[in-house]
View (cartoon, rainbow, N blue to C red):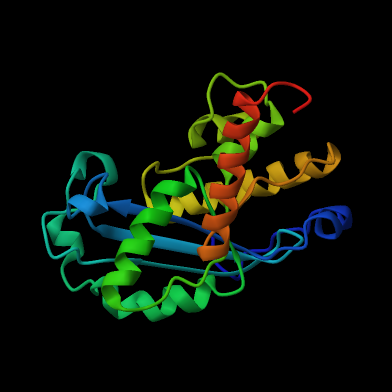
Length: 222
């Protein structure tokens, strides 16, 4: 999907209830742990307005400066990475794309920790202040599916998945999954499970967690 591909707007009620613009993204990586030295090898981002209309799509392979990792999963070989930019070279573009947007991914914590690691190493702030996990939103919607994998949700809504574990195709699929989830959430008048990030978000989560623990140990009526 590119910025030229037409996407019909979702009902106006969706934009009225959820006043957000979205950066839908996916990363492919050399492994599972950035803290252990794993790196991003591909990133794709698609921008949506509040009515779910695609505004722009962007993607790139990334030279991880190490072995590309599980080629049998993502299909990204050393040969494909020849001439690809290092993450530091594309970090300003990533920051520009994410600015003012809700960060959206499937199992968003995974993509977030990798981008946070890469952006930090590049010396470029990660500008997102809210993130939305489509896995968590699907769980909240209590969909009649056997699991919440992206492929399962795509099949549930009749969305064709051409190449799993390719960041470009996964992002294309995720855009359609997000649009379906937003429409379903609006019909059920559900609140989006937005995760606030940054210092204020961390403090809010810690206070909330402390409050839950206190309530568990205090007697009723205390």
